[in-house]
Image (cartoon, rainbow, N blue to C red):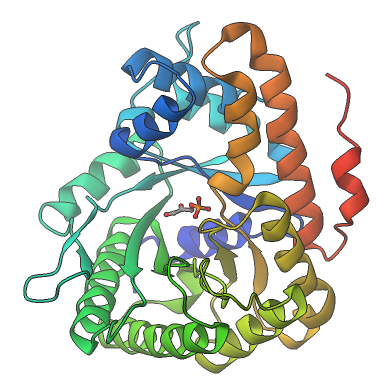
Length: 346
Ligand code: 13P
C-alpha cells in the first residue's frame, strides 16, 4: 500500500464531493493558443497567464469546483499581484491538479490512431508536482472511431499506459484521473460508441488491476456514450444518459469514488443536460459519484466574453461561475433549462 493511501483516499473523495466537480484548465500551450487565435487573442505567455488568473480568481468558484487541472506552464505562474496560482487555489479551498501526459502521438503502424506519451521521467515529475502542492494528476488517452478502428493494438497500448501512469501517481501521492476518451468525431451511431466505450473501459480496468492500482484512490474521467457529431441520427438525451450509465455499471469497479465526465465537444447546455439526467434518474443505482470534469463546456462562454480584454474580466467570470453552477446543479440532478436565463448580476 502506498504511504499516501489515506491522503489520496480523502483527496479522491473531496474531488467528487456532493455538488462539486473538477474544472479542466490544462490545455497545452498549443491547444490554448489555437482557441485564443480563433477569437483574436494574442497567443502569448502573458495572455495565457491572464486568462488563467481570470479563471482561478473567480469569486465563489469553490462553491461548485473542488479542484482544477493545471498545465505545467500554469502551475508555475502567479497572479499579476505576485501570488502563485497554487496559493490562490489553496486559499480558496480548491485542490491543485496537474496534467502529466505529454500528448497523444501517432501510433506506429496504425494509421489514424494515437497513443499517449509521457511515462519517461514521470516518477520525478510527480515528485516535483507533489512538492509544489499538486494532489492529483491527469492523463488523457484518445480512442478514435472510424472504419475498422479502433484496433485492439490502440486500445491495449493506451490502457497499459494509463495503468502505468496511475500506478506511478499513487506511488508518489497524486490521485490519478484516468481519462480514456472515445472521441465524438465521426458519423458513428450511439450503439457503435457504446461498443467501443465498453471495450475500452474493460481493457482499462483489466490493466489497472494488472498494475495494482487502488480503485478507491483514483477518479475515472470517461466520455459519454453518444452519437458521433456527424451521425445523421442524434440519440436523444435520455438515451445518452441511459446507455452511458449502463456501460459504466458494466465496467467500473464499485469502489472508485467518482466518475467525472469530460465534455468532449458537446455544447455546454447538452453537457449539463446529460449529466443531470444521469444523476436524476440513475444516481441511486450507482456506487460512485457522477460529476463533471469539463474544460470547454465550462470555459467557452467565459473565453468568448473575455476575448483577451481586461475590461471584460468581471463579465467573463460571471459566465464561468454560471456554467460551474449549472453543472453543480446537474451533478445533483437539479439542473433545469430555465437556469440558463438566470445569470447572476456582476
Ligand atoms: P473537454 O471537457 O473540453 O472535453 O476537456 C476535458 C479534458 O480535460 C480533456 O482532456
